[in-house]
Length: 564
Ligand code: KIV
Ligand code: ZN
Image (cartoon, rainbow, N blue to C red):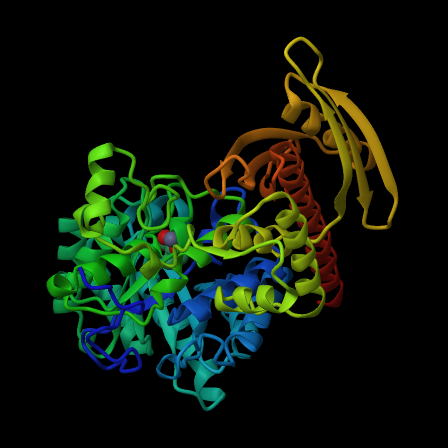
């Protein structure tokens, strides 16, 4: 098999948005994805992910829900200003493009105003407003009649459009009839007609609760495109949830039915069972090019890296057997398969790993490699580090190279994500000592430093070394703050093969507050107990960042109240 091209636009120009075969990729990792339980991201993490999404080549980044909190508004504003204005998505001259930056708003004046306040800093802003249309939502949630929904849609889409016209810009307003998948299709036509008449440029058709099958969803798109006056002048968009595991199949059915925007998230994260995963849709179109005849502007070689970044920042691990980006997606276990692979990779591989950015087995650097070689290799991997960040990562590399003979790209990625993709460090692991054995009492002594430089030391006994470690950290955190954690998930995996592999640990913890919240964390080290401690502390730090954010939001809300 000939190597596939790395980008996903072999048969088309990704910049030709008028090409009927061009599919726009609307990424909502930072909005719907962040609605996954426990996926709360800091604004710095959101900015980093947005930069990476631009580098990946997505067309639209839904950066958040500005009315949700002052912090969310600020995060969207920063992304609009910093990612929505430069060609950071550029990797080759023909891929120069600045993503559209979208914000979500309910169909209310307040939400739309806040959304505009945030997205207007982008070169290409978009307001995405939504209102439910299913009878279930109208009756129980909105308590509105169908007529009221049509009127509100018309008024609020028009209101969103007015911000663009006042600013002398071409309107870019997306409207979503929430729960379209369970809505009456004739009523949907009425609502969509009102949205088009009021100036909406994109009509998104959400299967909010993941209820449709591919046949139903495809037929719905065909019906709406065929029966809504003015449909030919707008882009139809797909937004599927994965409650029945059909999100990707539904999205592909919608594309077949003529929609040309797919709303997706990295790793398929999102509310409940998640959203359609970006990597699956993009690689299905790429691999089945002859069947679909469609293309995107995605640089597929950035898929693995983006997936890893999102997993690390959100603490939501990618399941091992996940299509395209799971750790086992390119692993061949059975003897017959391995034999086939050795003879010709196309026997058991429909996608070459490097096409999606898997470079795991490559030997790159060793003990004697210098800072320059290290810096250059990281740059090639898409991490152009300088100054302090480079120093930190190089220090870790040297430590690792002392203990591990061969350093692969996968090791480098783990070092970078461990050093850089971490929340603000309220607590840092300074030292630790663990004793365990068959008949002893596993004991961990942990030494942390808090952000003011104060040293905190305590010890605990547990059922095993990891349990003892977490208990000791719990004691230290509880000593400073009145909060306890329940460990929900713990996973460890080896970054590379061999006895000296780096261990990467991911945890998810829940707080014991009145309204429990979940936080994820990750850590990497040659010693898996140290990696476990780092992962746990990173979840604690994420909780601390969220506490700070909540306090800031309350303070801002009080401030707003006292002004009005
Ligand atoms: O699932 C959904 O309906 C949504 C809308 C807000 C687009 O996320
Ligand atoms: Zn959704």
